Image (cartoon, rainbow, N blue to C red; front, side, top):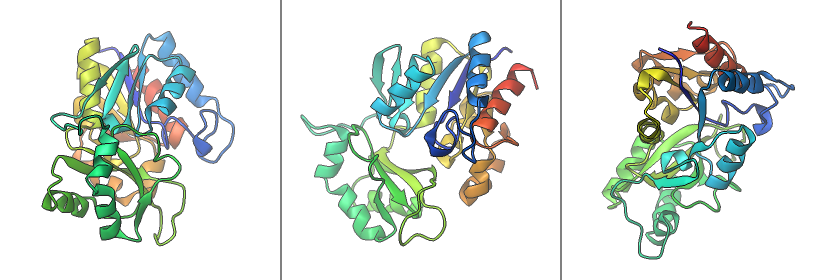
Length: 270
């Protein structure tokens, strides 16, 4: 079955070191990401960014690679050819407030900071100007965090692990992770399914690429899922989760090299 769509994460995946489309994992100049995108263009394969980043950032990256659809804030919302759909299930923000503001008003960030101090903080400066989710960095137990949310009456929210980050954090041993606090019904996987239905793509006609545990949840709704080598190399939780999904391949290349490997091998029928 021909490939029709590629869903790719940005940081640690399509983008190399320094968040650049033209750098590899070591920071050297690379054209492999561009060549992978060119291969998709020539084969009439749509490329959809699925990212935890806020919408203006993802919009600019989607424009840069010439694509009209993108998923942002870890699946809380999607834009397809300029039309936005918010995918937060039954969660309802307070009147006149965004989801982000409602979470603040209900005291949830303070609850998290107090419970997990000093191992959790906002992922500054990227935590601002968000509408549907809060972005943290640190090193905490996600299951414990979600148990805390439920116990305190916030079961409509959940915390997700969006992968290890490069930036070091005081009080944290090893790599810190990026975490999103968002409506429980939202996910990258749900956003991918929404896009597939809108476009008429079958799961077997799609692949996805990502480097986090949350990205890995997309594996069941696509034909194949690829993890760049840098993901399991720096994230023990991801290494442990990969065997649960039979359609996952860890690429030999890291970051953009892995994206190139995933796309070209799929187009070649490997």
